[in-house]
Length: 364
Ligand SMILES: NC(=O)c1ccc[n+]([C@@H]2O[C@H](COP(=O)([O-])OP(=O)(O)OC[C@H]3O[C@@H](n4cnc5c(N)ncnc54)[C@H](O)[C@@H]3O)[C@@H](O)[C@H]2O)c1
Image 1 (cartoon, rainbow, N blue to C red):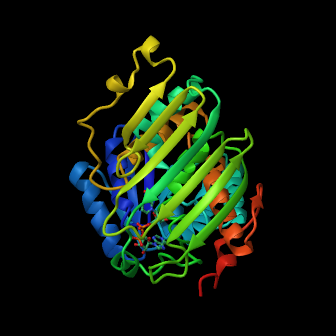
Image 2: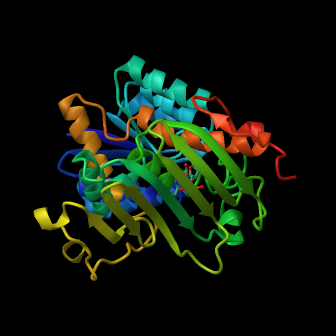
């Protein structure tokens, strides 16, 4: 049985509590940490409802927790800008790290996190939980089986609404120092999926971002073209401004022998499924499309529990988790390249280095 500590007990933390009790045969929550201790108390109570015999301590200071409890795994769900410092401290204390997305707000910080985990001989995982959505896994299996043929182009559209109340609820949101804009916060999942399916080898990014409506420092809309090493082209469209509520997050992939569109609220519903070998293997669109498929209750989906299970398997088997630090860094680098392209007005070649802090004043 491995032990877990949760660091950061705000909006998304219920997904970590849920993932912990969904994996309760293999992992035990030991501590909830948040300087706002009422939040940590609330998470403790949430977990104890599901696992009543557990013993969970509350800490305002995660460093005290690390020193006293030495947990096997730390889950970090604080404001994004704090992830690097906390992640490095957890690695240095000998813990495996499950870090919320985005892992960091600069390429330099991401590299330092990866290096610290490596040095400690511990895993580092980034919460791109949508990789575990059933339609996404099915698409990835088709890709790995070569069913798309040559991948030509793909697109991700994130048409969501994050209104003024959302930003007012937590003033760090939309700041360059702690969050970035909608591409870095909401769209990072879709950008991760796009690059994962298109070969993980983005070479050049050209972008235009805007702050249209929201009272924040960073962008609430972004559009980008990403060129991959294979010659394939990816298109990104992401917004927090859609009127009046969330519409969809849709990933579309077009290969020479396959077309897939996964839509729904957060890439959880197959909308198009066409492959040259479909008849032969009994995997036609009519078989795959499931009219009873429902959107999950929130855009966060169901993936955290599966991501935790993958981390636990990885630790047991001595392998890298599916979304390792290196893998999680790829979407970050693309988003930072998008920011750099907006700032310079030029295409940006990868690899590149950049930080959200270099965007300060861009839309003022
Ligand atoms: N995977 C997803 O789908 C998903 C969804 C939403 C948010 N997130 C990410 O999760 C993170 C948190 O977002 P949120 O909306 O829950 O934020 P939030 O503001 O609701 O919560 C953050 C919490 O972290 C606490 N905190 C700050 N410093 C701390 C420290 N040193 N030790 C312990 N706790 C500390 C704050 O007091 C706050 O309670 C962000 O990185 C965000 O991008 C991921």
